[in-house]
Length: 189
Ligand SMILES: Cc1cc2nc3c(=O)[nH]c(=O)nc-3n(C[C@H](O)[C@H](O)[C@H](O)COP(=O)(O)O)c2cc1C
Image 1: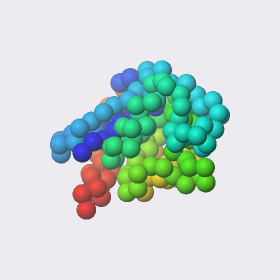
Image 2: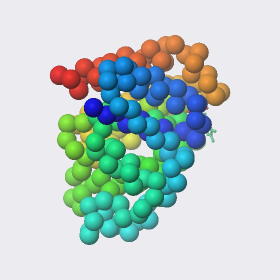
Image 3: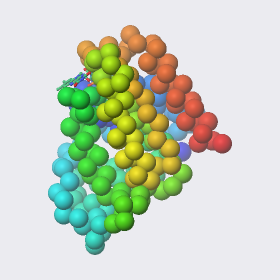
Image 4: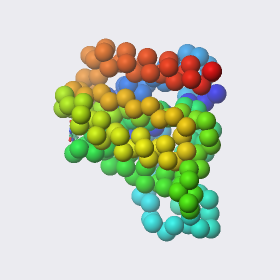
């Protein structure tokens, strides 16, 4: 049993990292192996639009930091992802990752992710504006469903700005741990 954590913030130890770490602890406590990927640090290029993943290859032909992440996604359940809001969208590091997930679409736009798996998408933002966070999250939740995840759970956490401020938000952290418990139950049943 493996859980994959994908951190879309450049701030290691920042608010997104703290939430995802709390969630991963729930799984680690139940015997899951935890793998963590800091997107800012893996040396990942953007999608080159070559369309190889739709024509000759069934995966991205670029060899870089994203290459092992495809297999980690396929072999883990759940996949816990998170990104801060930057300028009314996800941070660029996470968008780059989403673009590279283009390889999870077949030519017919059917998802290639192994069926039956769950993903969580955490969205953290400085403004105390749940609606803004939800509007950012919604599109990416739909995208990850279209890549083939059977279940994608959003968690929007507004009103957290300075580095580490999440540590003072027991309400947010409790919601994150509760969601992790629910996902765990879903995977076991
Ligand atoms: C370049 C940049 C753009 C940002 N844009 C927004 C924004 O549009 N709306 C918002 O609510 N917060 C915005 N923020 C605040 C972050 O979402 C907030 O600080 C978040 O807690 C960062 O999470 P992290 O510690 O995981 O990096 C922005 C921060 C930066 C650095």
